[in-house]
Image (cartoon, rainbow, N blue to C red):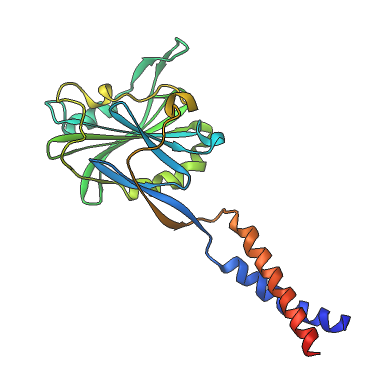
Length: 249
């Protein structure tokens, strides 16, 4: 009998493990949408309306300080055009940090790109909004509004979030729905947008439930806890085959 069990294990263990590895791993992302834009968030992210801006972060406490997305829109004024956005983002930005030290950003690039049939100005700066963070800017004009999306990532975690942010950018769409724009025509959208200068649970998500459109979608992800359950299922299948073989013997 022991010999028969060993033969069954040898015959079925490897195919079952291959089956477990080949199964697609799934996790839930969210498609965020408001009055002027939509895109796909990474799994376990949510967005909240903070004043006139939308702020998006991971719901995991250990990751909230790693990255942040801020969305802003204003009625189109005389400073809202792609050319003016491009010139603004080509230059270094200076400000005083919350610790009181002067900070000057390091522009990496600024260019015009096409995303889903919409022209955007795309730029990357180091320390332009938050000390020690990269910030990627995407700005455009749609009908009577100017739209700004910023993605800020801790410099030390930049590579960890790069794929997620690239996917967000690929799925980024802009439109104009009635209402929902709380900022007038005056001023520069980069200066009027209230982008947080530091990240913490208390300031970004002050105990409020997430608001705004979010629709669950399923996306494939390589790293997921479901691997454990797949392997458990494979082991259970092997056990069943052994049990059936013993009954037949």
